[in-house]
Image 1: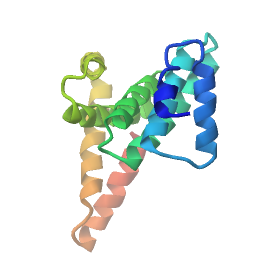
Image 2 (image 1 turned 45 degrees about the vertical axis):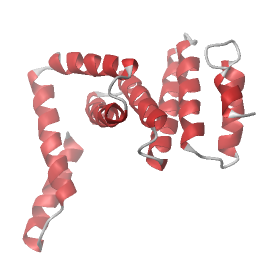
Image 3 (image 1 turned 120 degrees about the vertical axis):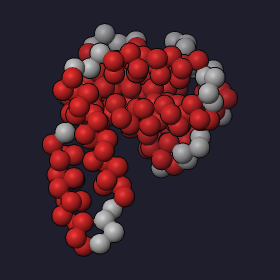
Image 4 (image 1 turned 180 degrees about the vertical axis):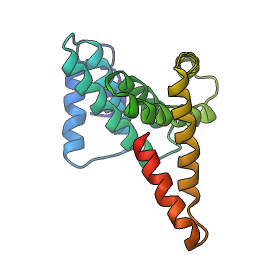
Amino acid sequence: MSFEDIDKLFGTDNVRSGYDMLREHYNGKEKSPDLLWRLAKFCHELAGRTTDKEKKKELILEGRDYAVEGHHLDEDHFNAVKWAAIMTGQSTDYLGTKEKIEQGSKFKEYLDRALLIDAKEYALLHMRGRYSYSVANLSWFEKRLVIAKTYLSMAIKLKPVDDSENELLQEATKLVGKC
C-alpha cells in the first residue's frame, strides 16, 4: 500500500488498520521520515479516540518517539519536524516538572525549525501562540529554571577550549541534570 493510500485512512474509522500497516513496515526495519511522521499522526488520532488515560499517554509518547526519530533522519523534512513538535508538545501533559521543562524546550526547537520551513502553517502558528501563553503563565521559579537550563545547555554545547574549563563543563552538566 502506498503512502497516498495510507493517507486516505486518516480521519476515518480505519485509523487502526493504517497504524497497524505502518507498524508492520516499521517492525520490518523500514524507517523513513515519511513512514515515521505518519505513524506519529496515527498515534495522535488513536489517542484522541480513547478514553483510557493510560492508553492515551502510551500512544502520545509512542507517537513522539516516532516523530522525533523521523526528524533525526531528516531535519529538513517538514512533516517530520511538524509532527515532532506536535507530539512533543502533547507529551508534556504527561510529564513531571523537570521533564516538562526539558520537553518544552525541545518542543520550541521543533516548532522554530518547522516555522522556518513554512512560516504560514496554521497549526504551527496556533501552537506558537499556545506555547507563548503557557510560558507567560509559568511561576517565577519555573521561569528562572528554564532560563538557567538554557544558559547551562548553551555552555555545554560550546565545550571547553582548554583543560582549565573542563571543571566548569562538568559543573554545568551536573546542574542541568538537577534542573
